[in-house]
Length: 476
Image (tube, rainbow, N blue to C red; front, side, top):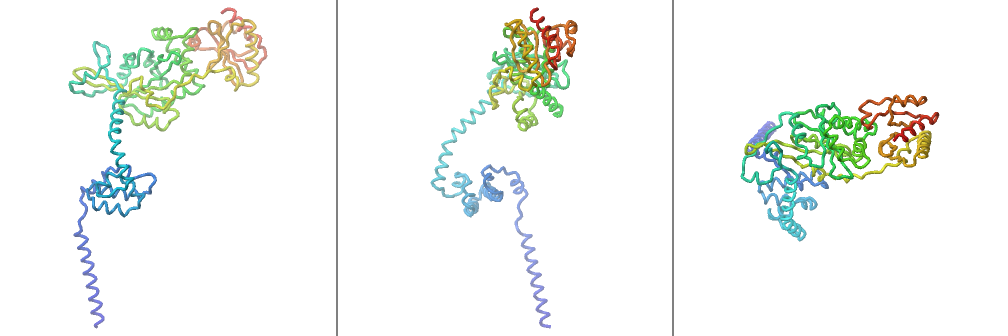
């Protein structure tokens, strides 16, 4: 009976202890909702998560930072003092001193250097900000003309209200109607917006600021509501046109057709030509000088930035962005451009493009022995006829030149394709043993006259080809 009572008493005591613990747990102060939220929103500085330390060490540094932000300096100091030295060394000396910690001589030196560098850092920030603002430009419409604004216009504190381009066409019209103001007097702007297809650029910019190295830009306007999937497909296609030799000739032919259709632009380009140079040759040269793609957008676009960061060798090197925004101020239509066209390469790491001279060997190295023999036989025979002839290697062909281009030789792997500047009907009367390709009128305009292509795959009956070319040479 006595054992029974003891057991019962023990059970009652155990229940009382358990109840007491439950009561204490309930009465413990729970963290407030505000504290929990503040910890979630706390922006931890970089020194709380150094790369060389483990994730658990990061947690300790973040806990220290939380105590510091809550101004629990005594607790923070005690907590940090129990950390390993390698972890504690990450705490900035100014914070360590603020919570009451004693700095080592090295810590004092670090703090001194930090304080001394503060004015320099502020100056750097100011210069960076100044540099950033200097790369943009503001414009106003006055008397129907876009004019550059100076800083005094905004000095009276007038309210600037941001407006929007309502359509992509409005943005493109603004660009095409004000090209000289936006891009400079040394440029020639070609508007193809009314005649473009899905995968051909709507606008082109030819920059002659450096006479020896004129640059070509394919311009694409990016409207804020536009599908980025379509933009990606177009830009990728443009890059293929510019980098892939299989597409370049077609690209040049189409671009030449566009120029031919615009008499005003054709005349403007002719004034830029060097001696003994024609428009197809100029455009071909510009295609060799690392052309670029210029994206003109009406709104910041993170996806475009991401594309350039991911596709470094294509988008990163070939694509540049310009932001044009529309505003209203003092009843004037104000436009801003950032960066200005002259500065689009300043932030890039791209080196100046070097013009690589092509040689006959460059064209012949991938050709078969048959092709090499055909080329050498044609060259030898024609130079015997007229020693003044020039065989000019270009990136895409070797031209036969005598005051003007008489023929263009494309050395393929297994054939020599010769664009001969001679009417097709007359050519067919003389060439009976080699294939003749008819060229579209637009392609003939690209080569600058009536022409057709001879496809020479072997040296049999090569005399008839040489005879035709001699006739063209004598006639020149």
